[in-house]
Length: 274
Length: 260
Image 1: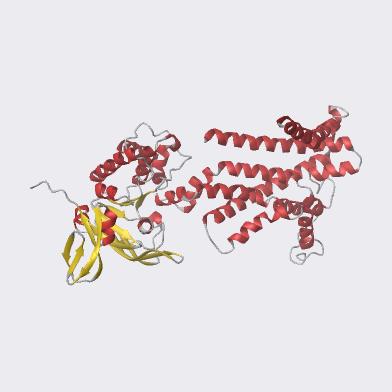
Image 2: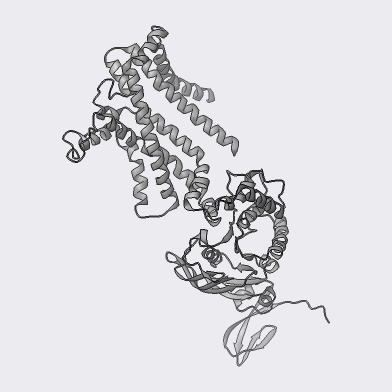
C-alpha cells in the first residue's frame, strides 16, 4: 500500500504538486492521468524518492519513507526513455539490482533467466541495449526494475516513446503481467485511453491537484469536475444561460440553482438495450 | 577553385609543419645513427627523460582525479560557485605559462610568501616542476568530461540508485564505464602537455643539469650550447610523443564511430 499525505513540491517559484493526499491499495494498478504540467510525474518521483517533497509524508506498506533515500525504498522504477545501461548486455542490465546486493552469481543467473523468460526475451540476454527495438528495450527496463523484487513498481510514461502498434500490444501485456504478479503498480500517462484500458483505478490530476480518484467506470460515469469530463474526451460542450432556476441551452434546459453563463458537458452513450 | 584551396592548405601545412618536422629528424640523424643514440643516451638526457616521466606520472593522475570530481560536480549538481569553478578550470589555458612559473617562485621561492611556512625545497627542485606541470594541465580532463556527462544526462545514474546501488557503486559501475572514451581522450591530451610543457617548468626549474631539467629544457640547453645535432636528437623524442598522441586520439575517435 502507498499512502501519500499532504505532499507539496515546488521547483523554485513553480508549484508542481500542492497538498496532495492519496491512498493506493496493495496490489492495485493505478494510472496517474493528467495533461503535461499537472504534476503527475513529480508525484511519481516523490513516491520513488527521486524528488524530495517539501511538505507531507510518503508511506510504503505502512513504513514512513519520506526521509529514506531512493535505494532503501524497495521500489522499481521504469524511466520514460528506459535509461538502460548502454555499456552492459541485456542480462547484465537485469542482474544489476541483484549484483549490487551481492547475491551469489548462481542465484543471479537463475533470476535473470526467469525474468528474461517473463518478458519474452529469453534469447536476447547477450545483446547490447542499442541492438533492441523500442518495445524490447521497454521490456528489458521492466525486467531490470522487477529483478530485486520491489514492493512497488513505478512507471513514467511507459508507452510514451513507442509507436501505436507496439503501444497497444504492450498495454495488454502490462495488464496481464500485473494480473500475474499482483505487484502494486503506479504509472503516469497523459493518454486517457491508455489509462482507461490498463488501470483498475485512475487518479486524475490538474495543475498540481487531484481532481478525481476512482475506477475507470466511476470516473467515466460521474466525472467530478468540468476538467475531468473534458479531459476524458467523448464529451460535447454546450454553452447557454442559467436564469430563474433553469439553465437553458439552444436545444436543452436543465434545472439549476446558479445564474449567469452556463456550460453543460454532454456525453453520447449508445444504449442498445431498447 | 577546389584545387586552389587544396594546394593552399597543403602548401601552408608543409611550410609550417612538415618541413620543420623533417628538419628535426634530418638534423638529428645528420651524423648517422650512432651519434643520435649517443645524444639520447647521455646521463643528462636520461635524467631529463626520467624527470619528465616522473612529473607526468604525478600530474596526470592528479588531474584525472580532480577532473572527474570537478566534471561530475559541475554536470550533475547546481551549487553556489559552480560558474566560478567552470571559469577557474579554464584559467590555466588563459594564463601565460611564464606567469604560472613566476607565481610558484613568488609563493615558494627563497623569499616567497610561503617560504616561512613551507620549508621543503620546492622551487628549483622536483616538487616545483611537478606543481607547475600539474597546474598547466588542469583543464584537459575536466574539459573532455563535462560535455560527455551533460550529453548523457543523469537517467542511467538515477536508474542505478532505484535498483539499490549506493552512490559509490553507481559511480564505479555506471558513470565511469560510460566515460571510458572522453577519459582516455583527456588523459592523452593531459599527458602530451605534461611532457611537452616548457614555459612554466623553465621558470621553476633553475636549470640544474641532470637534476631539474626536463626533456624540453634539456633540448634548450643543448641548443644554446650549439650542439644542434644532439638537441634535435632529443627533440625527436618529443616529436614521437606528439605523433603518438595524435594517433591515439584518432584511434579513440575511430572506435567511437564504429560503436555508435
